Length: 203
Image (cartoon, rainbow, N blue to C red; front, side, top):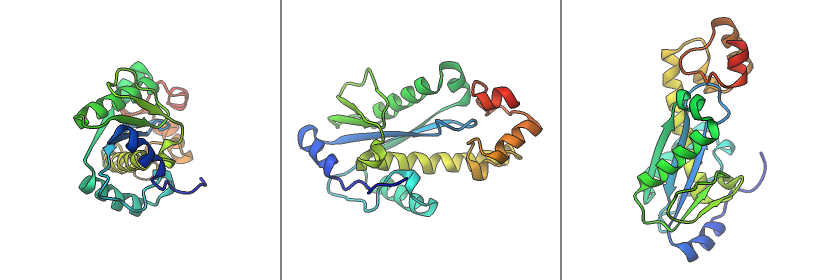
């Protein structure tokens, strides 16, 4: 993935009009096991965090450090999950949307705009800017992407101990070759998304 990290100019432009901004992003939509995880973050305008970027561009150690900074410096933050069962029941887009709305509502207000990474959010009381690749353009969404990634990766590492053999400690539930081979060999477990084609075909 290429491109310069966000420099905060877009955030500042929006803040001049709307005041505090909530960024929201998800991690895990493309995984075939485990939850989809959403974080929402309101960054503090007077507590800058250097190095924020799309979580996919950052190493695990940098993500962990930045997630700690986000927790310590943000005006507010929250993380929510949607289970594989709910993803199978209402589909990944609607599960992601529901998690994003819940995360935003849990922030408790005080913001004038939500910036979402491409997902429209009807029913939110303030304006929503749904923009593709927002996690690489807005600091608030980058912060949300980092927090969601760190939390979900930690959860998948823990779940790997409860459901051994799938390699979740390394693949985090995504359909790597090793994960697909394990799925073929030992079948699906309760945390696999049964509506996803690799699980439906191989398990």
